[in-house]
Length: 441
Image (cartoon, rainbow, N blue to C red; front, top):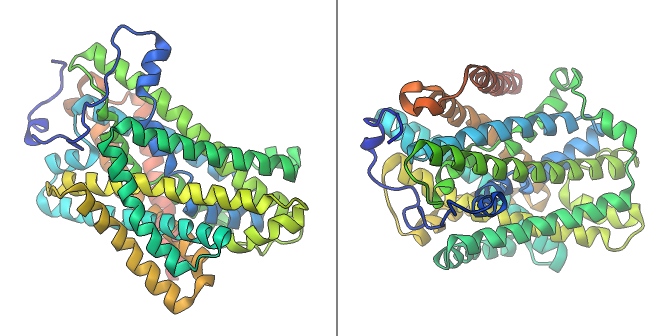
């Protein structure tokens, strides 16, 4: 047994996602590539949340209005995401607890209830973006009315249930296929749009105007909320435990190494896709004289005539559909994890997923009925700002737990890493407070 204070861990007897916990073998004596393949999957499932329709809305709005300027925000957000997801997977591997369970073991019931409510709000906001995005894609590609599309998305939770019953690897394979679909579609779009390389590269250099321009800051924080998602921290700390891992120091170190490689590569793929979306919007709309475009639907209809290629809009729509379907798979899993972790309430998976989906479907129905389909983009951007507002309540406990020697033993964050992660946590909190004050006053 490696050194780690066990009294807080022993408070939690149940396994996270018990039905798939430790269900995937890890080859102890295999080659590097074979071991990496065994751990490839959780990072990709987490990366899905970093390229959902909410990201599309903020990236399109940012690119169309401000050109390449906000590429620096996508880059910095992705770096923060890579570091925070490393902490999440490390917590899961070392302690055998997900982040929600770790909170339940350390905080009193009132604090845990508040954290659970905040996390459920974040998941609802995320799920809202996903189902609206999928419904919008169905509308653009096949002419299905938005309300009917929203209703159809209720049933995709059963795809998740079916695949999970067939084995967690089947679910991961579907996620990989959908990610590749998105990546291929946007790679073709970028080749067609022929962006200017020099201004594009300058966009990765942070600019002070991002902080002092309220409109730009609002979208920047929306990008942050869409990139570093609070529910992904809970999700990653749980699904990394689907791999079997011996309770020894060498085994834990090896698991953390391969899980971190998987996570980092996956999030770099998400970074490329997010950057492609913003670059496409900047090149086609901002520098093409359509800088008021901030609507996914409008962007879809303008791509073909502006680029002069009939396939551009179709590729955009297919990628949007894949994005919405992909993200909903992981959002419903996160809902199950936080309810079980914080409250120790175990529902049948299909019941929990229906609840998660209905929490997002009801407000989507109401908003579309009252404000019409033209409110979709505003709804998506707002959902990402809500996510950003909830982020601190997941980040601070995660950083505190993984920095504690008494909880993590020799796996606790080193001093340089502590400085980095606490800086990230304070920065995220400070930006959200600034945005809140600016919005109110």
